[in-house]
Length: 416
Ligand code: AMP
Ligand code: GLY
Image (spheres, rainbow, N blue to C red):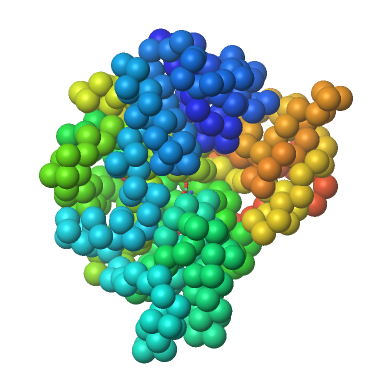
């Protein structure tokens, strides 16, 4: 099958690799130097690529209506239209739809007015959770114990300084506690089929310290998260959402990313995204045994029939990020070693990389490379990932040392 992939991150590199490994012919726009080794690169426009299936990676083009444009030309597309994309495009809209579908989530209030928001923060003790309404690349969320910090954040967000128009409404919500879980669900408009669960590391520094990022690493499977829990999440959160979409006339064909917190009261939704997670895709997709392209073709056609099967081995990915990420990443550093690694079970997915005129690979964005390794269990996969990192260098490269660390110590990992 000829497949067009939109995007330039580690997620798109992982998707393109899986498609190419099953013999499909991939064209990517705009792609990256890693994708260029396994696929053709198009200079765009995306809708002019000739293909049987169009897979859109990031949220921004979906929110802007790219899937609608392609569908209006009769193309088969993985990704929701502008209507379903509001789920990620507006946190306020997402919370409202969760409430109408009675999906377990944190209680919340929405504010556009500074005085009422500050008054609300003064009405209870923390922790405080403040979210920018619109798209902010995973960086618009503050979780803090400090009321002063919360008030400063709300004032800054509502002034439009921090995230422009995207930030002029905020959602302030109840703080939840518990381990986080990411579930990527394929959805054909009528039903959702979950892929293997994964866990993501959102904060920039070890021990979950520092600001939130797009994600600094991930692993799959997740200890003690088995099919029964996946089934519970599907029946409590995924099925009701799809029913609510249908009730509102939204034909959602694409990936639903459920970000959950496993609280003492049960799994609760932190957020829904409208696409494959990054870096979760880098550990979930390589565990899919089936031809993922065929499943996505069924998703786009509104008839998902293939049941996914997963390899028993574990995957771990560690993000190598640029100096200054996530606040102000510095680009331009020369990357050494990344293209020389040839180890069994290791894949290096490119994200923020660029090919300089000299031919050298250089840092071109905040999250630069995803060092991804497979092992018989999380401990083995983790060891291999970190060993591989020792062969890669760029100036002031930063990464977390604790990706999958505590999970790798859990005995009897349930391979969900
Ligand atoms: P989001 O962009 O909504 O996924 O939020 C980013 C991160 O902030 C999440 O992965 C959580 O770690 C944290 N977070 C978001 N909402 C809450 C909440 N209600 N309670 C506690 N932590 C949260
Ligand atoms: N890893 C978080 C996200 O894709 O939004």
